[in-house]
Image (cartoon, rainbow, N blue to C red; front, side, top):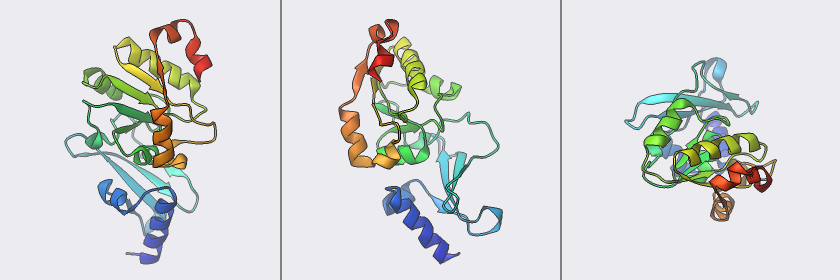
Amino acid sequence: IDTALGDKCIKYLNSRGINYNDIVKYKIGYISFGDNIGNIVIPSYSSTGYLNYYVLKNIITGRYINPKHPKTQVFLDIFINWDKPIVIVEGMFDAMAVRDNALPLLGKIMNRRIKNKILRSKSDTFYICLDGDAKDSIISMSKYLLSIGKKVFTVELPNDQDPSSLGYTKVWEMLNQSKQISQRDVLYGFLSQCL
């Protein structure tokens, strides 16, 4: 184990608002050998505890590296209570910043499994908390969620910010001030003006 590299990884995670409890909860690790040296490993587990995906984040280059498998899973499913309000975010670090019932998409689109899980869920309230440049995705998701009878709230993030960069306290301030979207907003094109 490269303790100097481990210390750098912990320092990087701390700079992203990830503390020791988060590291343990999400089972975050790092790679200290081979071609992937300097990569933080963020695993994702299914609702039954099986590893279903992982993301690598290189602390030297800042690049994300995803496995060469399609993003067809429900990410961090083990931490989601499908009976309570759910916050939809883009990335793993965003989900960790929100901390409570956050569903990362690993992008701006809900895959088929995520849609099916939402459809079957008892949760009737969803907060869409994507980056400020994702207006088209927010509109598309809002339409889907409203079409299956869910309540939808949109969180207006600045173009250059995401939940991870805002941090837990600020992102929850914004979640608590979010706007509920109605079918009327979608039908009459008001949603694009709201964002």
